[in-house]
Amino acid sequence: MFGKIARLASLFKIYGFHAFHLIVNPMLGRPIWVPLNGRKVWLNFDSATYYHLIHSTEKVKALVDAVPPNLKGTIIDGGANHGIFSLLASQKFPQAKVFALEPYHKVLPVLKKNVAGTSVQVIEKALAAEDGEVVFYTDPSSDQVGSVLLENVESFVSKNSTIIERRVFAVTLNTLVKTERISSIAVLKLDVQGAEYCILENADDVLAITECLILEVILIEPTSLALLEKANRLFPYYKALNPIAYGADIIFSKSPL
Image 1 (cartoon, rainbow, N blue to C red):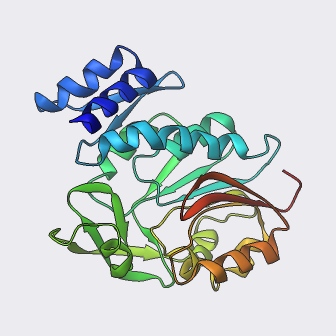
Image 2: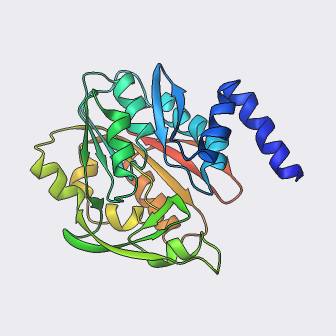
């Protein structure tokens, strides 16, 4: 009971009277949206929505704010989900081409709606270690949990959850850069439920043309140390953002931050 009251208080503190809409519309089976930088950002409603409304939007804004404003090049958003990072990045860098990669059929309609009319191009594929079809694992109770690695979904769901397996198309960073004729990358952001290292392991040529790398690093992941070592070797400047007890979002850069 107290948890629900605290959640409601947080929603009203962040969204003001718009919180009524966020509470009532799901009860009526209607879609929800939040105001963000002069636009409506639409969201699917599920068991984790209120948590992410309270905690995640400001975290994503912090990622975009941390990117130096003078960068030029393409922006790649791996694991775009509802598209908030892609949208904010397109607003901060209106001349940049933004690629939003997302394989999850459940969030793709919302993602496309959120970035309509911007420089964002949605690619309905997962970033992965190999091109072709891969199995993508999701928890139907939350849009926020999806990965090409089964164990990384199992770590974030309850024992009674039913994990859904679905085959999706995947692309490597090397193939993406070649196919889209990308010559320089201003920002490469990866939030892919622990698959970051397998995506970057053989992508040194891509990282060579990348100025900033943004990663979600979860220290309990078996590959987290290898991921940090690789990123720090190629990007000498870094800054931790949105720290939590077991990790943080980290921006790595080739220039001082």
